Length: 477
Image 1: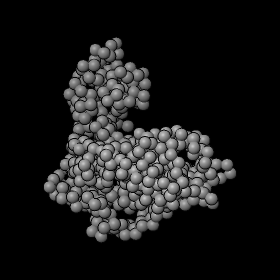
Image 2: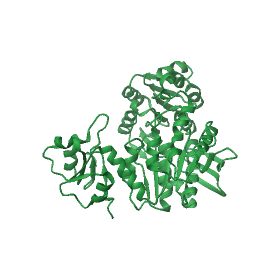
Image 3: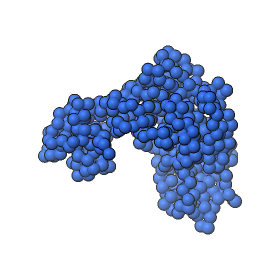
Image 4: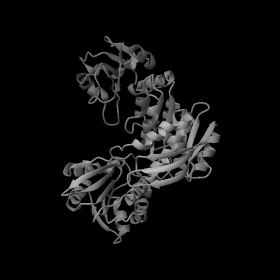
């Protein structure tokens, strides 16, 4: 395997100063001393809470072959004798290396943003492009000011397709990141009420998402959701920015990548879609209407990137879920079983509704019940009480038999539901986990959904620890 970077390439890209005898090069880059690989370059980034320089010796002990450190921190590293590249600012150096990676790459680059479905769409692209060539994509949700340059810097020169997720919760966050990535294709999955505490309205959110168009290469493409209420605004903005090509996806009859037929099944979806001039029949190995919309964008991007559409369509059938994003677990309870749907990674009004639809469409067995386990949606600002109350109607439409709530904002939903559905409220996720373990029974379907900061992952872990796994029928979110 060829090196990811030679030491000389890194010195030149980062305008760094070598200290000690440097290795010929590195095969990996890390910013985490705990997970650094043997011979990796460790970048000692200073974060909001921790400074990587404080963990430089741990990184060396764990196998780092090269350190990238700040000139100002060098005296504090004391007697550490590991080979180093010394720079003025470590994060800026990582950004410079990311730009160098992009400059040397012949890959087709796709960037994804949106209020809902960024990570799901990125993972779907990773999966369906693999039959067409070497794919490099963001790990987990590495979509911020350090995640994007890290993903760029890790991209091998041999990459055929690069897929980057770019997130934001304030204006002006996407702009500098997409100008590093320089995508050939940009996807805006949807514009919805996320991070509303930082924006006045949906138009402001659309404006922040539209920043992804500013980094497109000349003659690049943007893919917009034709079914979204902000489609017209985004298309106009694309024109103002001089975007060469604007394509759309959705059910709308004018969409370039259009859904013709859709059948939602308990464990998958089947669709027929028109992708440009091609009509394709596709099985999506993930239940839920939101995945269908993502798949239209993905198939459109596949065609625009020149990848093999037939192979990509076939690959959609084999999707599997990530932890916290719709993973399904069939768990043994007594002589029976129940289904746990793990949606604990993130939540906003749009993704909450999508998860509730998933609960609605998942069949229960025998005397089983639909149980919705919901936690706060964060970053809603002054809209918090309203958006939590507004979950009452879609929740009642699921046919849920039991609603379990935790978190201060969920009190508003508890009050709105009143006696319409059996509702249990607890202050903390751990209390809710204890309650659930006492009431779950054979045939139940339990869906857990909240923003990550509420800690509902602990509920999922508590249930997985208590109940043995029968089968892991994970599905992609």
